[in-house]
Length: 519
Ligand code: FAD
Ligand code: SIN
Image 1: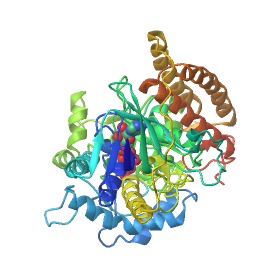
Image 2 (image 1 turned 30 degrees about the vertical axis):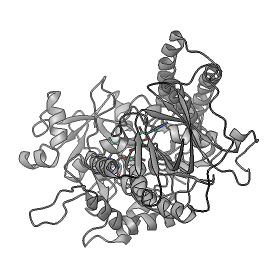
Image 3 (image 1 turned 45 degrees about the horizontal axis):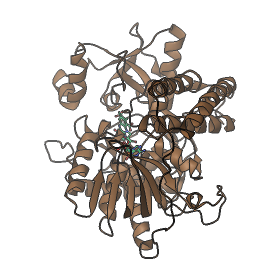
Image 4 (image 1 turned 120 degrees about the horizontal axis):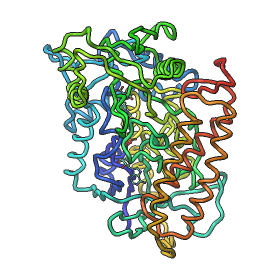
């Protein structure tokens, strides 16, 4: 199959790119589940953009840099912050609704690390609203084909032409991907002028995460195998406040916008504690808040703290957070009267596939967008609600870049079809599920909010066993989604641990107790 643009992933990044690129050529989107099953769909708090005074671009830039703990790429920060309003206008033109105040101005949320109200939102369901509008626009577009239940396995490069390639191979390029049709288990060779990896995050390498099950780090793993450069993988952001509801997966998020609205973190005995950790108290940057909660919980042997919004007016709580109110009521908590039990969970990958200003990876014709990429915007710790806007801005940058190179880029001949040797055994399928749980246990036990040199070393040793077993199985088995995801989770976990071991300091989301001084 041939397509001008092969887009892998149907979240904010992939769909925005598709809508922009479809003005130039034919776009095929492959996505591994239903179109809406993605991190974007679960976003609550909103999307950042400087909208009204007294906010300014300079303030948004400063807040992003401060949260990023000295590790942001300032050019990326400038680009995203200054282009944000333009991309918000595109979202609105595609049909996205944002809440407004009675005088017709956009209602702006505030979250941790922000010194101003600057987060546009739609109730506490912003991601679902953005995804709805993008999906509808994509479905209407005559130049876009969507293939649901299509799982990208690997990217095609000169390796598939029989050449030996490394990270340093000159002219290394991507020609498309091998894609598994999940319903028939056939593998298609999809050739493209440009391939866009927009596969989202990797929260599921941890036992508890706010991410839906599709977030298994496939794009980062694929790019890594194709010899693209990845960076900042150690900066896994834990969201401080997911609902403590044992057994529920994924963890339901209690948006940080609730703390922006005035909610307060409390210990189980009712005491406030964030004043010990940061002058912004419950609205401190996310890494500091998650670590503070973790410290208090481990010190006391407790599994959650409380978020208290009961001092705010009940009607206002219900109108700002209808989805959260309904969810909590469904498990017997009336948040207008009762405190919400919350606990941190893996939430966002600040690192990923290293890209330039146009979203281009170190491999030609290969772009990485959204959470899969590392643009340098987030540094060591992402400022809340900066990720959706980053996905949009870089999707637009990449669409412009590919459009300029369109005529000069042709399809590659000579890529062989997938070799279908091998069989599947039911017993092995059961073991895949068990192995996934083992990866999650290793990452949660040894590579969580607080790590150490010893814990990282142990994690690597344990992961090596799983790696060996899984590669052996992969070598003699027909591909299936479960096996490919496991393989990708192991690859991504490896990168998180490896890059964590290389960083000899504690900074942002990477806190190593052997280097307690911030460098
Ligand atoms: P996603 O939206 O995750 O889309 C990835 C797509 O790739 C999915 O469709 C998936 O099925 C597909 N895919 C994955 N692997 C494969 C494969 N191998 N083959 C084919 N398809 C594949 N950010 C904000 O800015 N503001 C917020 O308020 C906010 N709230 C959040 C709340 C929650 C609960 C979560 C989980 C995240 C939140 N974030 C928020 C983060 C933000 O939602 C994500 O970073 C962003 O949506 C990522 O968009 P994306 O397009 O890169 O990836
Ligand atoms: C939230 O609403 O708290 C999540 C915001 C984000 O992750 O950017």
